[in-house]
Amino acid sequence: MARAFAKIAFTPNVQAAQARMGSRDAYRMAELGETESAELGPDEIEFIGARDSFYLGTVSENGWPYVQHRGGPPGFLKVLGPRTIGYADFSGNRQYISVGNLDGNDRVVLFLMDYPGQRRLKIWGRARLIDEDAEPALAARLESPDFRARIERGVVITVEAFDWNCPKYITPRFTAREIRELASGQRQEAAMRESAAPDMDAIGSGALRLVVTGMRQMTPRVRAYELRAPDWSDLPAVTAGAHLAVPVRLPDGSVVTRQYSLATHPHRRDLYEIAVLREEAGRGGSSAIHATWRIGTRLALDHPTNQFPLHEDDRPAVLIAGGIGITPIKAMAQALKARGTPFELHYSGRTAADMAYRDRLAIEFPGQLHLYFTRAPGATRIDFQSIMRAAPAEALFYVCGPGRLLEAASKAARELAIPAGRVQYESFE
Image 1 (cartoon, rainbow, N blue to C red):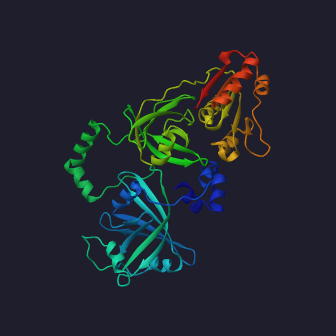
Image 2 (cartoon, rainbow, N blue to C red):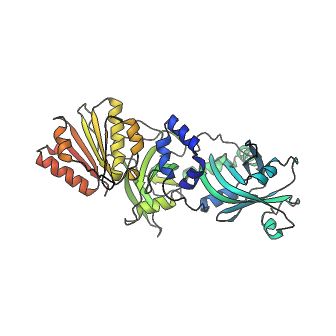
Image 3 (spheres, rainbow, N blue to C red):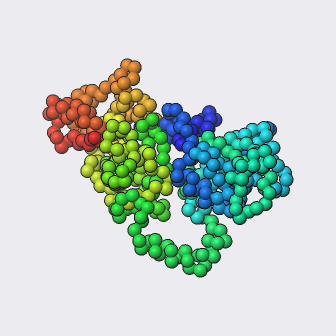
């Protein structure tokens, strides 16, 4: 729901705040393309059905927001359809603030919390109030079997957008029932059984356990995935150029592996990030990731390896990326900058809108980044001979991208008699 969420939440003032605080580039690509249909998927339906409370936000005609807590037995918030949810509203303190607000503005936002699991789902929608006498069949669908008080009204919400939040700062809290289970030892025994058994819900069979904790739509076809340890502990250290062999479940149920370079700053230990280009005519792996990975998706994979390592001495570097080949090159640029090694970065893409991380790189490397647009008005292409001829005599070259980019770079290096050891290649094809 990236675009639907972004187009509602990222108002001009929000965009200005993001620009001031340095996060605008990371979120800009979420606004590209047509807004999706905000249909609830299996993960959202299951999550909603397990909640015993939520927070409801409305806005009054004088512009003041109001947040109200709503609670009931698990499942009292009903999923009525792919884009419709609702709940029964019973008599409370009779202030009717939310009811009155909805008379003037039908916009609402819901926060659904899973405190023990440290998960949070935000839902934007438009609400209408229903009367049991006027719409008895619909009101009956909102009833809970174990709570037979008269419904004062029903609230039916058409979902406009939803978004899963990062769980990092959600403090775990437990119900009285959960505390009783903890005290009786039931939870500890269950946890021991789960830890002793393999994670049957994880995709793959490797020793490294990761969970998807963030997703960002960076271009219309590129989505970045943030991966962390399930307990948010530090991950194995990596060096620039490293990659993960990611397990992917295809539509036929089979599990395959696909190689994705780590785009994370190599000094970070708290997360890995990969960027996945959706290839409609590919072998199905990237499309399956885009279609099925959600916040909370669990993976069991092998530890990262590096077959495209960056040199460790102080020789200058020339980094060249085409398309999604920017992912390891980005990490290399960050590593070189961190250690003060001279470098320049050349990045080619079809258009500016197709280039993942472009805005972020422009801010981070203003004097070193050179951009090329191959399908934009006044198209520019990388002149490999000019770049290699102008580089310092001891410079090392790192090239990542499609096969034709690597072929052009290799041809230029041969014509300039640059030793093979000074030019390193990695293809994402």
